[in-house]
Image (cartoon, rainbow, N blue to C red; front, side):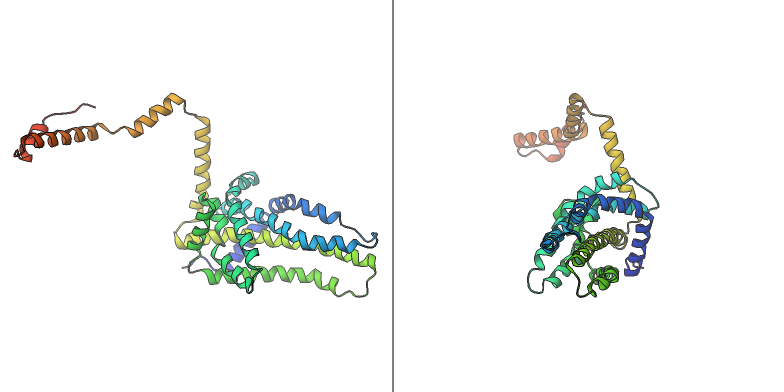
Length: 317
């Protein structure tokens, strides 16, 4: 039975979000703090003329800032989501540390999709690229891959599942749009507003825009981590327990190497032990060289006699 199904991924993502609501909200608040400070500093209802220009600049430039900050959010929560799916907990600092691996793939995905959308039919091309590279950031976080390999790994994992992933992205987008319309429709329905009321409405819209994008990107990051776990189960037969053990083995390896550093002398001995051939290998190579020399001298001597002459000799290590 296929583990990756759209409604299953949505349900597991909501469970992971509600179980980690407070730490994820704090992380999102810290990441979006520059934009929040920017919005708070925008002119309010008491500002005079020219306050609309500040909001126009925010809607033009602030969107790119929000997209850039959003790419950092999804990789930083991947490790904690994977641990939650396995029934374990991990600190946010650990999740952020592992999340550094997936920042570059997430930036590449965001940059390519935004650039492609400037072209005709760019929205369709952006959706196709997203379906290919949907789990690139979780793959980089869990498997410790470089950006190019992570994008290729995502294309491999999503093969045969891209239509469900497309439907998953549509469902997430519709959920966020429905939430946004709840507060946007009453604001847009107001007419004949005074300048002070208009500035107050623009400030409310700016705040809600930041909150909506933050919620959308946070939930999308959770969905990506859950989808990666389900796709690994379908493609590789890997369970959540095995995915979680990847982080545990990495932590043990790092702690062991940091707690017992190797001295230069011991490391050189280790290198020599690895590169030097074993005694049996040295014996066989010496024996083969003797056979070659004996054949060259004898010319007509049979290989059996040379082997009999060489066999009784033993080479000590």
